[in-house]
Amino acid sequence: MQTSAPGKLILCGEHAVVYQRPAIAIPLRDVRATITIAPAAPGSGLTVKAPELRAVWRLQAQEPLSALASMTLDYLKLAEPDVELTIASALPIASGMGSGAAVGTALVRALAYVAGRTLDAASIAELVYTSERAFHGTPSGIDNTVVAYEQPIWFQRQAAGPPLIAPLEVGGPWTLVVADTGVASSTHAVVGDLRARWQADPAPYERSFDAVAALVVQVRAALGGSDGAALGALLNRNHELLVELGVSAAQLDTLVAAARSAGAWGAKMSGAGWGGVMLALVAPAIAATVAEALRTAGAARTWITHLERTP
Picture 1 (cartoon, helix red, strand yellow):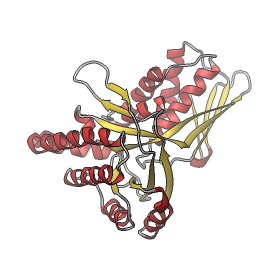
Picture 2 (tube, helix red, strand yellow; picture 1 turned 60 degrees about the vertical axis):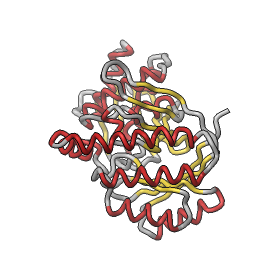
Picture 3 (tube, rainbow, N blue to C red; picture 1 turned 90 degrees about the vertical axis):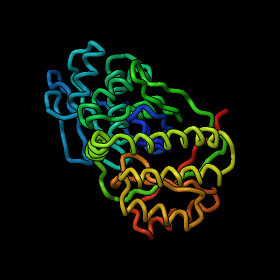
Picture 4 (cartoon, rainbow, N blue to C red; picture 1 turned 45 degrees about the horizontal axis):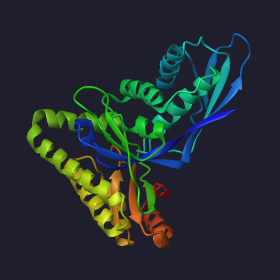
């Protein structure tokens, strides 16, 4: 038996979303983390294996996945089962594609299966968020939400109470080329650095966050339409604001420029920054050309993905 969860991309609004501004995120349904569930010998307890990392964790280990497993078992009111969970993931680690949230969501689903339960998306998202908060410091909550719900969402944290989450209307359909810089990106480090600068002088950052929020509103409208040039221009502007916030990197800027030169309607970094991935909005006919241009410009790998029109 297997459970799985998709990766994700933040289409627009990253970083500002931590400060109660909206963001839009989309699932990568064809790029997933998978967990294979197998029975283990009686009395052996729970073992989590990650062959790609050459790592094995037991329930008592001081590791994020072990903590999430313990929390989930408590939530399910399930004693430690004799089971072996093996992780396989097509998502690069620390890249902005939600690898941690995808593995965490697949893990929660696996333990729910062992318990004979099916958890709703809201419960899964909350469990994974609690785990990510311990690991990342102040995550926005967007990764765990879009991965658990597996649909494009509008996400906005509130001063009090749960975040505002709404499904989005998608026009298009849209084609995206995603490129990995090959440089690991620490969400905790980037978010923490920006928070320190914001605390020292909040006014200019608040203006930037407001500008990002205004763009997100425009992207929501454009996403429901079919004008690629208009949507691309908004993504371009979002990248410029992220550069101003100090969260981009030379490698990201190089790939963004390469995508635009190859004919993309728009391109921007996606996720925490200082590395990780970028995305380009393209006409389907030039997707392969843009992907090749990104590899030539230094991308470690590329993916072509699609955001389908909502019914």
